[in-house]
Image 1 (cartoon, rainbow, N blue to C red):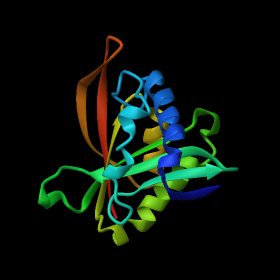
Image 2: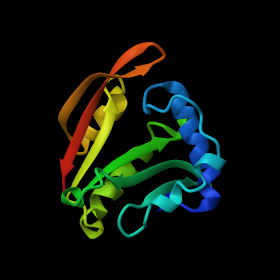
Image 3: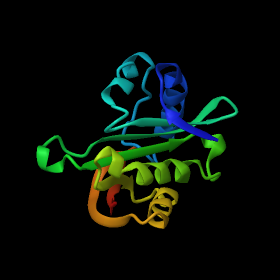
Length: 162
């Protein structure tokens, strides 16, 4: 397994992983699949030295990804990053998400990050468990803020100081 900066050539795999996640209704509030074209600039929004977009590669195939982005675009929050992590369904529960999160934690200070925030649906128990195991705490709850296929879902805010 190799974790590296994402490139434009990784975008088809990144989009495929994300679209599978959309369909599960467990890890994203995006309701419609995204097209490759609609995500062409996705990677350009990330800077390797501040808010990277990493992929995990296994035998030459992208099997997971993690992105960091500014939490809120006001200068007082400059040192806080929101993270998102997605793993190809064929490779889940093999430590890929954990490895990506551990890399983010290990590199946080060099990226100027003092805190991470994650937004996780309350019914996404595997993600909540993983984040908890890596030192993230529950920082908040937004009850019934998402409507997924007619079902109101809670959003848990998790965070970690680094």
